[in-house]
Image (cartoon, rainbow over all chains, first blue to last red; front, side, top):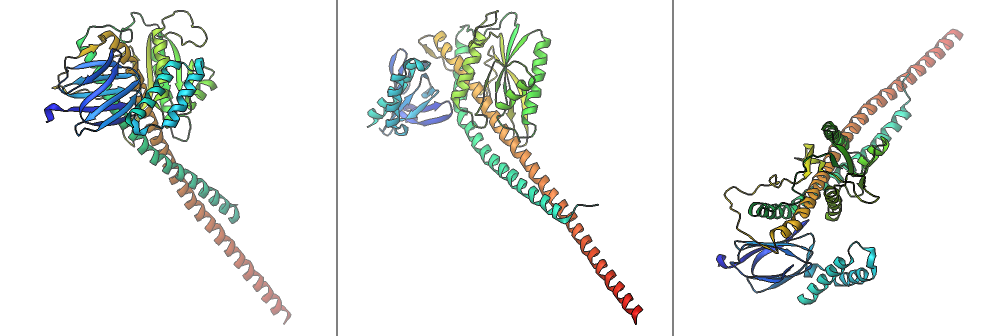
Amino acid sequence: MSENTLRVELVAADRLVWSGDASMVIARTTEGDVGILPDHAPMLSLLVEGIVDVTTVEGETWIAAVDAGFISIAENRVSILAERAEMSHEIDLEKARADLERAKSAGELLNDPEEAVRRAEARIRAVEKAN
Amino acid sequence: MALSVREYRARIKSTESMKKITRAMELIAASRIIKAQQRAQAAAPYARELTRAVSAVATYSNVDHALTTEPENPKKAAVLIVTSDRGLAGAYSSSVLKEAERLLEKLRGEGKTVDVYISGRKGEAYFKFRQRPVVQSWTGFSDQPTYDVAHDIGETLIQAFLNDDETPAAEGVAPGADEVHVVYTRFRSMLVQEPIAVRLLPLEVVEGEEAPEDDELLPLYEFEPSPADVLDSLLPRYVQSRIFFAHLQAAASELAARQKAMKAATDNADELIKKYTRIANQARQAGITQEISEIVGGVNALADANAGQD
């Protein structure tokens, strides 16, 4: 069994967001979505703002919204690093919607309005997908 | 002539209320240290994974990156000094500033011009008072730094490093620097905190906080989209994570220094109260003795006068 599970760590800059054993991880890289199953070849890839989908060994699904970061896979260890990451149950949907509205209307006020929009959208999508 | 009993009582009272304040500050600092240490621990996995990834890329690809290339003839240096926002922390800020002065002296001795960046109000005040230029300063978070702040500082310093304009840069743009140093206080234990200066850029990846075990062979990674792109995105993050780490350490050190200073202040207040109480009691007894001798003297005088009449 231990041969065929992924040891997943989802790490944000200031905390370990989630860790556990999983049978599948789906994440969005700069090249497109990747699905990772056990015994995947070692890989280091860049993530874009989006959602990460983890299916645990018990068949549960955990969904997290992450900022741009990267994912590294080696010997059935998956590390997902992002400056900010939140599990879907931690996200305040109302707040995420408000953030999205603000990011959209703020326009040039923010340094990178598109990034803010993508981030807010990712969080909303994460919650919606989880429900 | 000693002061009156009333004045000693007033001094005892004011010392007591000061003691209450320092004691409260001591306890607050003590409870915050634990939180600061937890934050530092919580940030460790990110730093560890990042270091692993960076060393993996550095080991398996021969990509040169701007952030790791040593400039041939470094002439300009940037120094980030991490100090506290508030005082009452003993020698915390002054010792980190002393270390910074030493580094500045050394860099100037090597013929480099130095730009100073400050984090924390105390350092800002120090340079302002001496009317020395500071390129940029960040304040208001010294005892609980967030990653966003570190991100911001990191971005500015990386910008400065990548900017190799010889001429003074335009308004709002960081002037170029050939190397970037950070001076902060390392938290070794509750009792020992030491100011240290490290060179942040150009990067030397090997000096990780925790080196991976020797027997651990790094797997042969595939890099997507390409090693250069991965490195491009990893290295700035690595720098920011180092700055975040420095700030977390500095925050824990600041709180430990404050706790120590406030404990010393509380102990001193205790001693003062003891001393004043003793003197006040002496003064009170002297007063009583004097009163008694006055009464006795008066009684004797009366008795003498009465005896004379009889």
